[in-house]
Length: 273
Image (cartoon, helix red, strand yellow):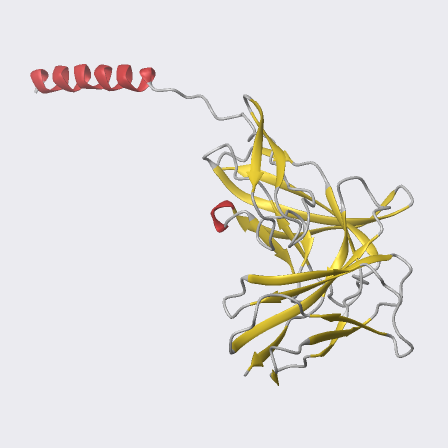
């Protein structure tokens, strides 16, 4: 019995010694500041180089072609919504992201709202589809966003603020939904927006895979007597099949530096026979 007690005592000392060697430090280092991307440009603008900040310094990112998936904060075709994008996080232990939105009256911040909280592993794109909820006036307003990034230890870091001024959507007329058209004689027609802020419209044509096939910049924003604008298709021959088109509106860049100003119409599907 005495021998067993001595062995138990020695084992306890060894266990305490091992426990003493373990680190009791708690992670108190916040994540590296997240890079919430400002408006980089629009579908059809071509390539761009922009900078992302890393702990070792700024690094250039080269994009050969801007599209709806890589151009930072932007309007979307689905509704009066705004899509956010951020650079991949530097830290590997980022747990979740809080998304915040507000607008301003002069220099006063109004309507500060936590839009959502999303898991960090859900990707680097977030769609604010709550912007047109009852009580909001989504269009003709500049919306500001920032994100607050939390790691698994509860440390957090806030991004810089980006913004986008959301205009009303152009209304498409022809080709209409599911129309069957002659691809050799195709004219696009839409209703002009009743705004003095419009600087240009861009007509975009996509194939059945939603790959951009053709676009046209309409810089003459004065409509005809009926309030319509038109653009004639002058691209490569259209093979029989399914196509989608939309019109993006752009405003004068008189809002916050590095913010966007515009809208994207709903997409219309049509067929070439």
